[in-house]
Image 1 (spheres, rainbow, N blue to C red):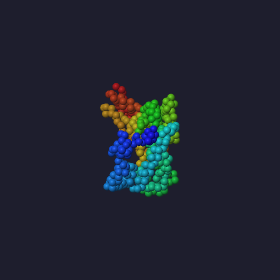
Image 2: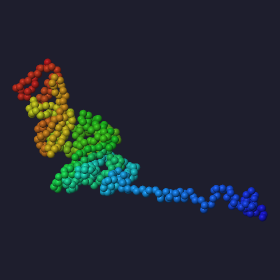
Image 3: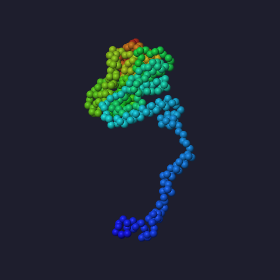
Image 4: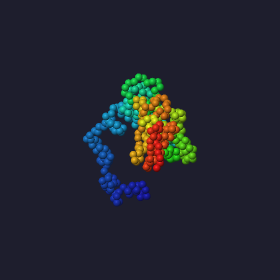
Length: 427
């Protein structure tokens, strides 16, 4: 064979080891690879071997039995002993929450609208063991339940926190709290005029916006000094009928007209407008009653103001029997069996050789009328601003003499005088 033939010489040259022409390539390859040269047919891959081992183990592994109902109850955080209806209901609530979360994620980058407020209607049903439901729309009366006056709405809120997170433009919330189905005795069909307002128990405002909270604190420092009012703290409610606002309307309006930070303007005006729109009719009625020295049981809350001088007729109507007090706090009213009853804490001073500061709780019962308006002077307790001039003069004179008694002072009593006026000669 010609050595110049590349193909032939190459095959011969590489087909034998060390120039030996007696050993074939296949045998030389096996000797060189050693243990790694075992034929495939005689050695199984590692993965196949593990799979076989796993199959063998599974024959002896005990079968795990899972109670899917219990697992679902665990995920829903409810007792596994509840009925199937409760499980389905909880699943529906969980599904709704997941949908709200998805909607929240999709609206995270949505532009925030102008400040606004939101009214929520909370219904507590006594026939359902005090279960509470929250609605955006005003509930209506259904002729069902123990009193044929069950409340229900059509736009429920399952998760208030998520709702507020999705609606960051809400500056404050107005809560309307109702209670239905309280009386377990059966009643006749409800009268046509019966509506949700007759079952409204409480109204209050929660401030959500930190900007509004700061603005209200500033307003309080400017216009509400000297009168009890909300602190506008993070967890403090502002209760209807907002009497502190009624008695400081002029001061609040003046404060609103002063320059304020731009961030406060829209949200404070929103709050101001809501209060006025909500209360204007009542406040106009109260103003007209007070102008005529009249009041009614419905508006007794507006008559007394803390730090106000009042006259108490507990010992009689004669001037010498009247007592003067200073109001300490707002009136506390309660209605039992449609009868008005109230009380108020008031301050006075006594003297037994020393002056003693005394706070008494004065009752306000037996109103001249439970329905119609009446004269303020017919009340057992009334503000001094409505008293006659002789009564005010007699009480003022008595107080001046009382104050002189902090030092030694000669006094004399003249029984003939109608009002037992105290006469004295200052020492």
